Length: 203
Ligand code: ZN
Image (cartoon, rainbow, N blue to C red; front, side, top):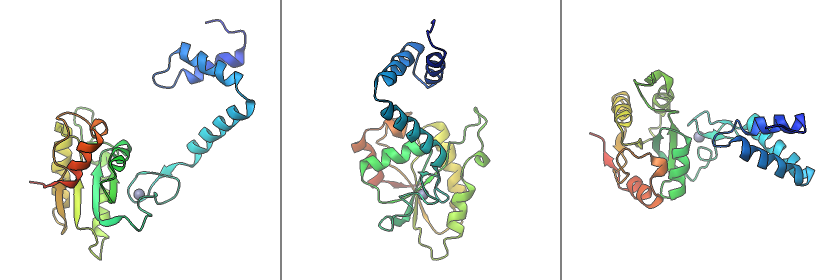
């Protein structure tokens, strides 16, 4: 593509680096931004910049957060006796959407996958163990493993179960209404909500 403006050309190049956006779509978006009020485009740029600079990870559960503690961990109305362990932040969003779970989370940041070279030390497993170890008032009663029903999910669940066994907590998994090989994110809300409620003891 030949651009009449170097500025437009570099804007198109930057936008086209986003996933799922080709050069044509990038050009359409850039021309759209050019047509809108300058103020609106400014606000978009500032919002993205502020988001990128300020969003951080919760020091307790590793969920995305604007503060040191995420809004879920900081909410005293949540049931601190339950910790739901998930692979990533999209799973937190999927489970929150069901409005069926009132406990807290622990985001692993991935899943054990020997094929991809991801081992336990690459995940937030130590901090989960630490959460239980420092739980002196034994507030946590149950850890729910809400991992994908895949081989990697099962491997991770098995590893976690071994790590958590020394603590006096019940370990459960979500009932498998979730389609085999399907990710939590894609399970429909009703199924996912029901499976969180009707969880089963891990064996
Ligand atoms: Zn948190």
